[in-house]
Length: 369
Ligand code: G6P
Image (cartoon, rainbow, N blue to C red; front, side, top):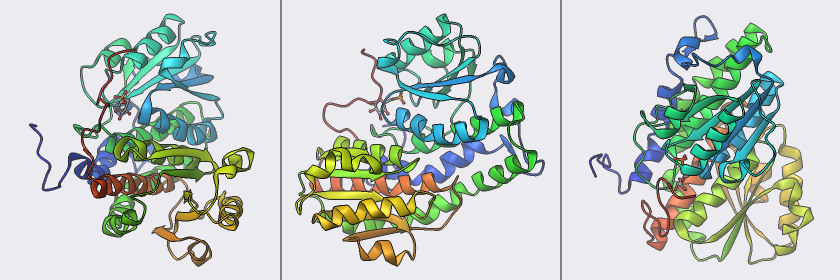
């Protein structure tokens, strides 16, 4: 391949470590820290009438879809505008509710995924304003949309998307803030505060990356399991879904992501001493409730691998293994709990000897419907 692995054994590991720079490049210039504003010109939304939007639709597949699901918590909070996140392959099968006041965002690393392309064409035909959020210049999706809000993650080679996910998340959060700024949905000081937090994301990710060798050791213990559940609440839920997706893609271990609160409505029946559950439980607004879910898993003998806040002995004590991430603000947090998901799947795959960069049956960009 033309791009070198930069001394890493796999592209995926390199790309996991590229995340701080991917996020920095995607938000740099667009955030005017001094003015506490978003630089509208750098968002390149020249044809989109952000002031007129009353509905947002995010269209994507795979990991890009999960970035959309995650961003929704933030965009709705910032703007008060309802956000639908739709799987591209399904979005056309519903009666279109889009119109000129809808902002349809096609999120795609490659910019070539056929389902996403078809879905955004459909939204456009139904008069939505369309934005391509892509990581590659000159793509079909970029060409199709009214505007292009680029990701600057740099070329991604590993089939399993990592740094593009973090870039997508940062760009979507920024887009949410941009709409809030344009529609005056948040006080100026609040926007400035969020921008200040967002620019700290790269250095926080650096800190989490230092956990790689620890996660490598932990992963050894879980290589031979048949199935793993991933749970999280609120915006940790899409991260649980992404963690499960990564694991099945890379290691061929069956994995399922679930909303922590839904455990009692089904998956809890699966819990016994043979079941491992990855629990996302950092100290956030969902913490107490997630802890009680973890207690229920523990009471049934399930093995618990938790991702929580550094120094949280309460969580550590009820877990078989614990990965501690630094304390940080709410806007930084999802970036930090994502990284251990990547590393866990990566190291399990390496221990199992599967083809990390090119897992069986998968393609980097899917151009069939
Ligand atoms: C494929 C890749 C995934 C990716 C998905 C969507 O399935 O293997 O890593 O998330 O396509 O790709 P896109 O380029 O549209 O983000």
